[in-house]
Amino acid sequence: IERSLKFGDEVGGHILSGHIFDTGIIKKKTTSGDQMSLNILAPPSIHKYLTEKGYIAVDGISLTVGKVVDGCFDLHIIPETMRLTILDTKEVGDIVNIEIDSNTQLIVETIERLLKDKVA
Image 1 (spheres, one colour):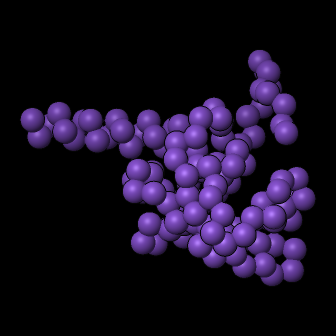
Image 2: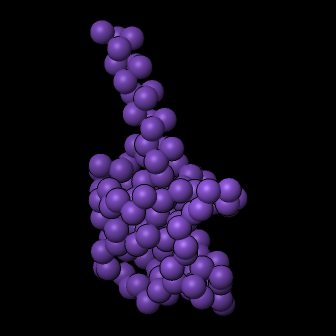
């Protein structure tokens, strides 16, 4: 568990709130040496927030999104993340909690609102 950010600390990743947005299902798990990849089926509620190289949290772990295809997204887990988390215990069919990056959510929803206002 990472400690909370303190005033004056450097922000080295993306900020998580701990609020679960929805859940996904692990569709595929691949291991190669000391690395692992997961393919997660995302619910429709988060499709618009998924972008390749964007940020997401899965079970509270800050990660970078890989390829996004047909409502699924890939995660490529590096050895350090595997060592510090329990992601390597996850199996196909497991349900995972998903938190959308707050900056991504803000940008997507602001653009949607502006486009809606422009059409109206």
